[in-house]
Length: 425
Image 1 (tube, rainbow, N blue to C red):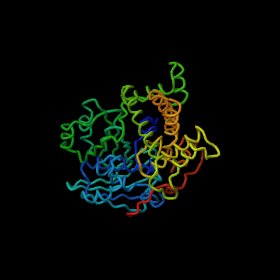
Image 2 (image 1 turned 120 degrees about the horizontal axis):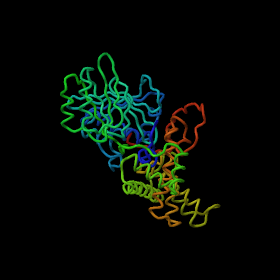
Image 3 (image 1 turned 180 degrees about the horizontal axis):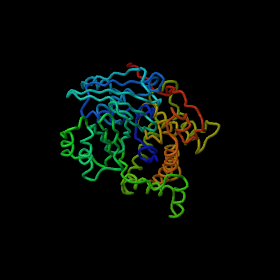
Image 4 (image 1 turned 30 degrees about the vertical axis):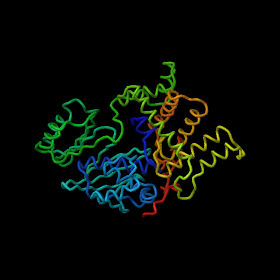
C-alpha cells in the first residue's frame, strides 16, 4: 500500500510557484535525472506529449526554469531561478524542449528526458509528475522502474549469472530497505534496491568492476528518506490512536512522521516550524505593494486587507482578513515566489491564512501552530494514501482535499491562468 509522508507530500515541499505539479515536479525530475546520469549534463532534451499538460503550460508555469534548475544542481529556492535557462547556457548546458508524440504516455504529466555529459555518459528516462511535487521515474533506458526520490535508489543492469554477487554488494552493509526487485529479460536482469544511505564508494567501485555488470544508476533522494513504517494508514486508525493515548491528532501526526522518517519528535517539530515560517513569510510578502503582475489579474490582497482595516468593505472581520491572507500567499505563488505546498501549489494559501490569522490575532503560539499543521497533515495522509493530489488526474478540487467522484473521467489538462509571463521569451 502507498505510504504518504507529511513532509514529503502533504505539508511540503518548499517550492517556487506557481504549480507543484509543473514547477516543483519538474525541478524534482531534473534533479533526479542529473543524479541518475552521475555527472553534470552538457545536453538535455526534454519532451512532452502534445495531449499532456506540460506541452500546454511548461513556459507559463515555470517548468522550463525548474527543469534547468534541477539539472544544474541548484536548490529550487535559489534566487537565480528566474534566469536558470540563461545560466544553463552560460555553464555549457544546452537545454531543448520538444513537444512530440510519446509512446504509451499514460499520465498527463509524462516527460521523456535524454541527457548526455562531457564524460560520455548518457541517460534516457521517462518520468511522471504525480501531484504535490511528487514524481516517479517509470522507465530507465528500456527498463520499467519505479523510482520516487524518497530513498537512495540504485538500479543495476547485470547478466543473470552475476546477479547474486551484485545483490550482495548492494546489501552487505544492511542499509537496504524492503525487498530488492529484479526483472529478467533475455538473460539480463535489472536489479533495483532502496537504501537508507548512500552506497559506500568502495562497494560502488566493486559493483561497477564486477564481470557481468553492464550499467549502474544511482539516484540521490530529493526529499526525506522514509526509513520506517507508518503508525496509521486510515482515518479510523488515526482517531483510534488519538483516543487510546488521550492526545491530539497533531501529536499523533508527530509520532507518525517521526516513525516513518526516523527523526526525533524534536526534529519533526523543528521542520514543521521551518515550513510554518515560510508560510508566514509568503503571507506577509503577498500583502505588500509592488508585487509582480499576474497574467490576468493585478495583486489585490494588500488592498483588500487595507480596505477591511479602514471599514470600507461590506463584510469585514476575522474571516475576511484570513481570506486576504490566503490570497496573499497565492499572489506569491503565482509570481514564482517561495511557498510551502499544502499539499500543492494550488492550495498553498489556505493553511497559511488560517494559522497566521490565529497566531497574529488570537495569540496562537508556535507549539500550537506546529500541532495544528501536523493535524492537517494527518488528514492529508489519509487523502494521499487513498486518492491523489494531482489536479490533472482528478480535477482541481483534489488540491484542497475535495473528493473525486467515482468514474469521473480524467480532466483535460489546461494551462494555468494566474501565472506571471516572462517577456524574455
